[in-house]
Image 1: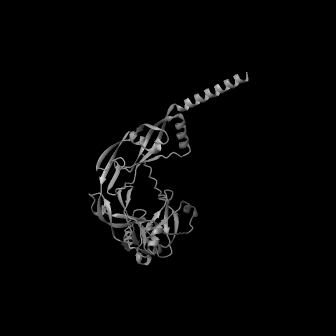
Image 2: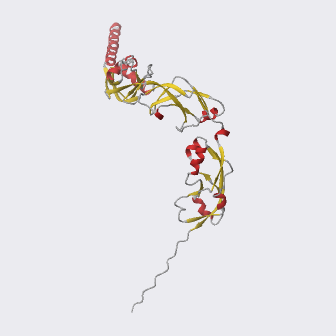
Image 3: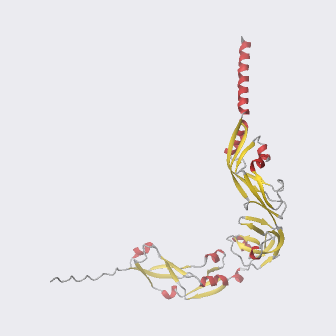
Length: 347
């Protein structure tokens, strides 16, 4: 009796294991969205490879197939953030280095990727199913190096050594489009005013697609005292900044107009000074809504210098005196009272 019970129990367990194994062995499908395919950095610097001008594309939907166990493992990796969502296309490995356009079939390409095959999965379909690989042959040219801040504003440099570098660029480029760029952060700009700093220039092949040239250059910016000069701006033009709650309802009476529209001392580069001279208003007096509640009380407020923003970002213009203080009052505007019309006399 004991032997029969053991045999029956063993048979049940063995049967369950077979069913579990068979269930796990069945193929299932898993759809993964928003994967990224990027062009790998080519070992050949004379080639510029893109997907129709873009360095990467989004794979909207990739359908994978494998055993239930493999699919469950991949689903767990995705949920835990351990599934790499970016893949790389190597044009040399795919033998697509001839200048021109090539059609890449994405399902076949992904099937050959080790990361997917090692998971025990196959690729069923991809959307989009194809992409155009564009290959452009670049030419080596000697190009000038120009320096910019992180807002893409050109910087005046004391020296760039060497002033020119060799780089691979599209053959049709000429003039100002034919240059290598160096971008300096604010901290690097401060360092470059004290001593030369090294930075590697890059060629902008297309917006957002940069490629570094081989060698670094040494950059020095003008020292502060050499860069900024002292100027006295006369006959300053003042503007008002006020809301609709004030405009037309109150008159602003300035108690010290000679001070607020007299002179202002600044330190600036010549270009920044010219730009400041051309501003419509060179100083701004801000009127707050709460000022109307102060009755006939005289209000004191510092004027704001309306410096051109692009030169402020580059530290090329600044106030060279204490701020001028305006003294003013808000006087309510009395609406005009129309005279009553005479009543016509009736006979």
